[in-house]
Amino acid sequence: MPIEIIQHIRKVIDLSDQEAEEFGSILLEKKLKAKSYLIQPGDQVSEEFYVVKGCLIAYCLDDFGNKHILQFAIEDWWISDFEAFFNDLPAKLFVEAVEDCELLGIQKSSLETLFKRIPKFERFFRIKTTNAFVALRTRILSSLQKNAKERYLEFCELYPDVEKRLPNYHIANYLGLQPESLSRIRKELM
Image (cartoon, rainbow, N blue to C red; front, side, top):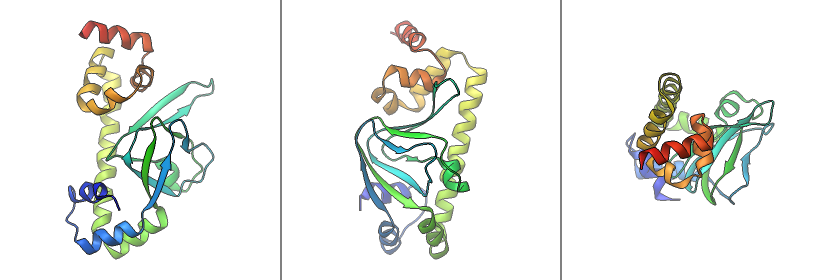
């Protein structure tokens, strides 16, 4: 079991070696090549994934076929179609590998059993979910209150590792900009 996920968890909760071992026993390793899908609309989503290596994007398509990126995930982040995962609904999102990825999956049923056996894991996942909610709210407020340049600067400050690894058009999409507009902003800042 990769030590990265245990270190990730220990940043939030105390974990004995035995508890870490039990957690590790329910993880499923998954490898994904760049440009392949982890999840597609209509899939049943029974797992959430921790990124050991690589970069993924979660997005939806509107009625006109336009892509709208909702989330990135790099090392030490979690990704899934969380609405589908938590509510037992078919997926609405695409989750696609931007780079070759190594992931650790955890089944919802295994997670529920883990919560009963080691309740502190429920605290860990509650904190992670709360942090994700706050980040989403911050992103929405930023898109409503800040201009394009301010949003880009905020993105670079919050996610410097992501900004360096993604193509311009993905970042522009995430920020609600045209790629040309983002290129102009970058030139202004040089």
